[in-house]
Image (cartoon, rainbow, N blue to C red):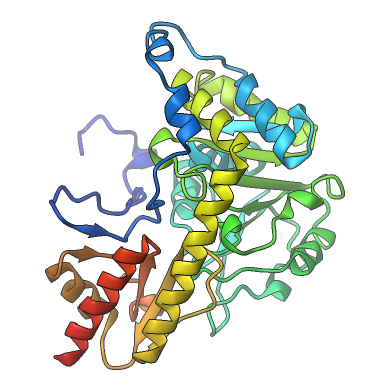
Length: 353
């Protein structure tokens, strides 16, 4: 740290992304990426002609991809805002709707960027513990009257709230923004997009990184009412008007419109998840009911850290969190059937001792 860094940021603990190892023949199950390539229509559209236009700025209004999202989700174009990944959408929301008089609240075990944004923007959040079974206690969010951020399904547990539960939270906090972070919703949970027209305090954030197979393109979006979208647009155009590059706008549009490929990839990941859960449970693992493209697993005779280390020795990398409440677990991204079979085989070898 240099002597020039502002005192405001001297104690910030940055978000730690999942490891991106540069190792050959490694099975990478640690960052919740898709095991599948982008839609063939995306690859076809990213042609030499489009690449040759990279000397030109991208469309700051991201019209083409917003129009595709509007058509797919049945909302108006003025209800959609694009971000450089959903992380940027979240940052816009923390900036726009939180301050010293509107301090945010979120779970103690959830997406790790929430507390980082609070440190970055000088906020003092209320941290609400998960229940003993690692689920979100709906009653804990009733009548908070402050901005609420909920990942649904939650990370890293994979557990999801129902729309009924989300409505209870919205109904009891009508004067505060409620953001539902749906990074993983396509893998089996209920989307709150259907509630946007009913609740003017609801923002739904989504990403192309998981179910759209485009983690490297950095595309996220929000769906909300036009007034809240306008508020977040003010953040965007005060910071980075060209937040999506030309190729990401094209990739996002083509990905959204290729529903057949999307459905096929989702179905296979869900199938591979159920296979992995069943096989690990046979071997004594405890796994919450994940509705995401990952599972959260622990074993009574094997610590989370030990399992992580032993898998790494066998060229499989998963995610381990040292936080006290979840240190016995590892988070395992669902990959291809071949990758998950390799995980099970490696687990058998580890359990043999």
